[in-house]
Image: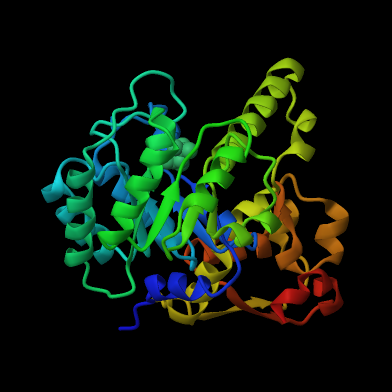
Amino acid sequence: MFIKNKSLDLRNLFKKKLVRIVGAHDGLSAKLIGESGFDGVWASGLEISASYGLPDANILTMSEYLERAIEMNEATSLPVIADCDTGYGNVNNVIYMIEKYEKAGVAAICIEDKIFPKVNSFIEGRQDLADIDEFCGKIKAAKNTQKNPHFMVIARVEALIAGWGMKEAIKRADAYAESGADAILIHSKKKDKKEIIEFCKKFKKNIPLVIVPTTYPKFNEKEMPKLGIKMVIYANHVIRSTIKAVSETLNKLNKKGELSSIEKDIAPLSQVFDLQGMATLKSNEKSYLKTKTSNTQLLIPAAGAPPPKEIKNLQKIDKFIAKNYPVSLLKIGNKTILDMSIDSAKLNNINNFKLISGYKSDYFKKFNSLK
Ligand code: SPV
Ligand code: MG
C-alpha cells in the first residue's frame, strides 16, 4: 500500500525560502487551507480547544488532540505539524506521543518548554517554564523514538513569553538545538517584531527558526528569510475568521428573520458539497454500486389509443384529454398513468426506461429522456 511520506514532503519544503503554515482545528479547516495555496497545516492547540469551547490549557487529552490531527491529516494532502504543547506529561508521555503521532502520518510535532498543564502563551499570569535539562531529555527521547528519519521535532522556546529575557531564550534555543531538535520555534507576545528580530540576530546555531507572529502582525514575509526564519505559522486566524463570520451571520438572521438577508454572505451549498467530495462519491457509485435492479431496463408499453369505456366513465378525467390522448397520458389526480409507473419503478431503484409508444407518439415528446 502506498503511504505518503509527509515528513519528507515537509523536509523538501524547507528548500523554499519560507515555509508558510496556517493553523486549523478540524478536517474542513485543514481542507480549506489545502485549497488556498499555503504549504502546510498547524494542528493548533488553541484552535482545537476553542472549537470545543474550552480553554487552551490542556483540558483536552492527548487522544482528543490526536484525533483532530488525524482528521486534518486525512482531509488534506499537505503536511500537518501538530502542536503538542508540553508533550502531555514527562518524557514517557513524550515517547508514547511520538509513537502515536508518527504512526498517524503527522509530518512533525512541536513541543514547548513549559510545565504541564500549560496555559496559552497570551494569557496573563502563570507561564511556568520547564527545567532546561528536563526539556532537553524530552527532545532526545522524541528523536530516538521516531522511526521515519524525516519526521521533525520542533522545540519551542517560551522564555520571552515567561519574561525570562533574551539571554535565557538564546541559552535554551542553543541547548535544544544541541539536543537534536530539527527547528526552534521562538515565541514572543510583544506588539512589534523588534524582540523576535533581536533574537534572530543573536541566535547563531545553524538550525531553522520558526515564528508565530500573532501579536506582531506588521511583519512581512519578505523580511523573514534574511533573519534565518524558515517557517511562519499563522496559528489562529482560521478560527478567528470563523468566529467573526458566524457571529455576524447569526446576528443578521436574528434581526431580519429571513434567510434571504444572509444568503449572499454565506457559502453556497454547492461549495459545501464540493468540499465534502460528493463528485467522487457519485462517480464511485456509478462504477461500483451494483444493486439487484441497477442494470434492469423497464419497458413501458404506452401505445394504447383512447379511451376504453371504463376510463371514459371514470370521474375526475378531463373529457377532452380522455378522447384525444394516449391512455398512458391520462391523469388520475395530479399524475399521468405513465408517471405513476415511472415513480413506482424509481422506488425500486430502476432508472433505465424504454417507452413503447404507438398512438400519437409525438405526445410523448416531453418524455425525451426515456428514448
Ligand atoms: C497554538 O496555536 O495553539 C499555539 C500558538 O500554540 S499560540 O496560541 O500563539 O501560543
Ligand atoms: Mg498551542
